[in-house]
Amino acid sequence: MELTASMPQVPLEELYGQVMFSNVVTMADRQQIRAALLKECLSEDEQAIIDRLLYNVRRGWLQLIED
Image (cartoon, rainbow, N blue to C red; front, side, top):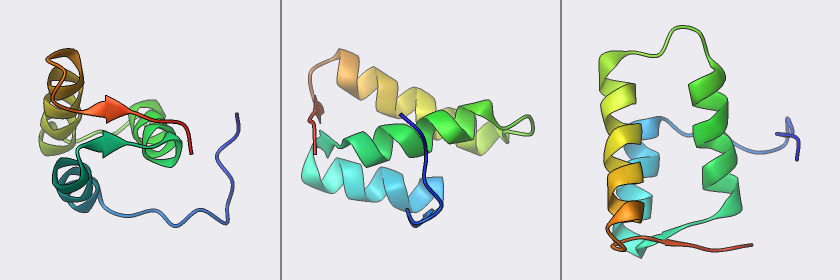
């Protein structure tokens, strides 16, 4: 799947808040996380946010859904 230009990109901090509030990670969220990981200059804060999201998915606290 390709990340389209029409998808709005929100900062990872905001994405984290949305995901933790809803307890679900959508396909669009996953694509944005993937795009962030493919960036060459990921900050420590961004890496920590992604790590926390992955940890929460592994623990079953967040659910992956298909849009």
